[in-house]
Amino acid sequence: MSLWEPRTELGRLVKEGKIRTIDEVFANNHIIKEPEIVDVLLPGLRQELLNVNLVQRQTHAGERNQFQAVVAVGNEDGYVGVGIGKARQVRQAIEKATREAKLNLVPVRRGCGSWKCSCDEPHSVPFVVKGRSGTVEVTLIPAPKGVGLVAGDVAKAVLRLAGVKDVWTRTRGETRTTLNFALAVYNALRNTYYFRV
Image (cartoon, helix red, strand yellow):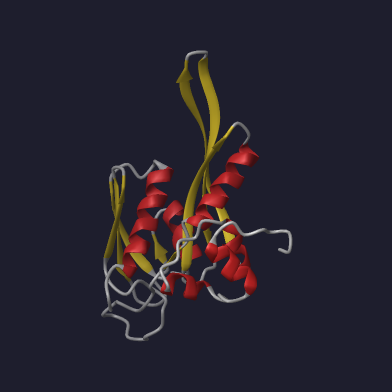
């Protein structure tokens, strides 16, 4: 990481070692504008490609084809991000989506909100949360230990990267649209921090 030249104040603080953890970044309400900050503070970040689509745009010269990639990143321990990238080549689209996912990284509050389980371990969501994107609405319901992720494949990938092990989900809308489904789950997880507990 010695080749990285920070372009923002937060980047300089991270490179100088004044900010050592990602928790400090969110505690002080800093906005992450460089993906390298996430690389330094969360070295064990995993990524998963959720979808690659061919999209077309009409221009004066005709149709332009591009690939659209949807990528989720997370450390499987309370941080998750989802990003979208478009490019003429698949690899570039995935790289763009990964960069955006790192910039969209958010903390996820986990807990044991199920009345059937009183283990006090952070394995599920602490309360019922909803998230929307487009026509898709996702409700995350706390589940007791051992239930697993009762959700669609896209939602499972995002929840796994966030570190949620047990949850029930209820969905409405066109969940076959991978992008909206992933963003709805991401928004629901982000909403866990909107309530002061």
